[in-house]
Image (cartoon, rainbow, N blue to C red; front, side):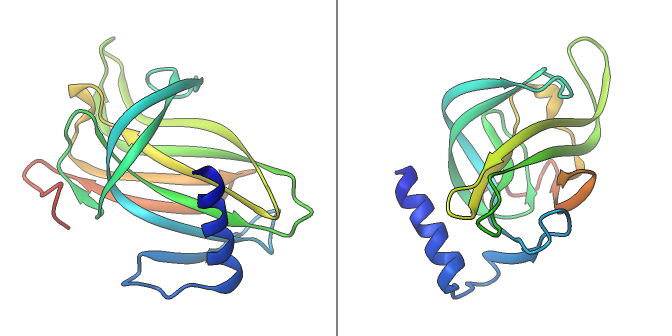
Length: 183
């Protein structure tokens, strides 16, 4: 399955794509990899499927990042939170083939939540190294609503950075009463 996804991304990048109502957006990367292209897609609402593992994320509320299989529910930036569901997007970076890897920092800023320890949390982040294959690297940024205290209404923002340079930023609005399943 992974090979077919990468093949799709390579075809998409190398041969172009018919943009379907803004479902795919091509953005230039403004950092050390200045000739790279950033592609975001499947921006919206997700359902958590199988948990595959965890990675260390000391600057997050939980102290780790959950790696999960996810089902894309629909394209939207306005959702009503529900336990076991999340918000996020998928992305790919097309860079000159000389690039082997890129170090990223993913930063989430959200309304104040009070965690189980009574601590106020408004920012969470983790670091990730992406490895390029044939000039392409990709990943997924997802925030899972796994605790009731995380389901706070307001503006949420996820930013991908490299060496303090913003590569991409995506906004969501989380609100009680908004329609999570309808765009």
